[in-house]
Amino acid sequence: MDISVVVPLYNEEESLPELTAWIDRVMQEHGFSYEVILVDDGSTDQSWKVIQQLREDKPQIKGIQFRRNYGKSAALNVGFEHTSGDVVITMDADLQDSPDEIPTLYRMIKEDGYDLVSGWKKVRYDSKIAKNIPSKFFNWTTRKMSGIQLHDFNCGLKAYKSEVVKTIEVYGEMHRYIPVIAKWAGFNKIGELAVHHSKRKYGTTKFGMNRFVNGYLDLMSIMFMSKFSKQPMHFFGLIGTLSFLLGMIALIILIVMKCLNAIYITDSSFFYLSMFFMILGALLFLAGFLGELISRNSANRNQYAIKEKTEEAWK
Image (cartoon, rainbow, N blue to C red):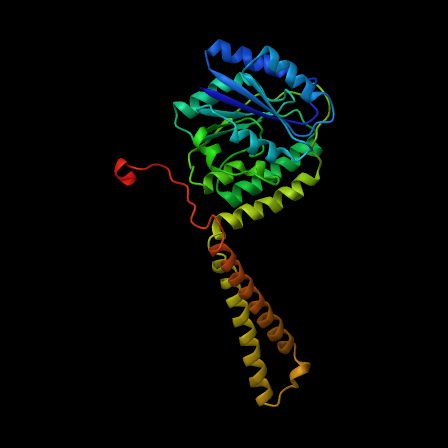
């Protein structure tokens, strides 16, 4: 199969018939074999009923329904598990992403050799205050921290090699950082395509401002886990050691001053500084040690992403 299209959705009953018809038209025009996986993230409207009706007319349409709302990351992760296409396309269900971009995205993966191609909504039709300005700041910060030069990390329209979605895991609210997750999994050829963005035709947006706060916390988690999940002592132990050394220096200064009868120990700020940094250092070192024990005893401690094996490796 050429293409799997994964569409996470929540209360999008009006847009689904139009979206699936649009996808089918593009696929037929370009001769692609395809499937559309619609993941209903616990909708409270008639979305699931619409999916079942669409499935009766088009066998390429497959539906997955959650019992409750788990979030976009969960919907994408489950959708990825069920894909069988060589190229996986993700898009939102609100008709703001254009299926007409699919052939170009497919070509960039299959012919240009990209592991992942992210859409860039160069011209947006969202609220400037609620979405555009915060999104620009969010993307700038993510570029600086990850080193990935994309303009729009959170664009729902993306294309992947099948190998990518079968390797990475998306959870929490980390769908915004899929390019970062893919990079740390070893998929370094990440491209970008300026895509058409439309105004929302039906319903209202499902995202609030709190996603930006949660987004940065998730970015911190990804950056830490990607670098130190296997060896947490390298992070906590280093900071703990430096903190303990600062405490020791403050203590030495305090002892010298006491020997010179310059101060009373408890009257000096160095006493409290030494106590603070030494206790902090010990706690951080202990945290690293416990993290190391947990890491070494985890079920996936020796799981690594293998790109390819020679025939001899199997003998």
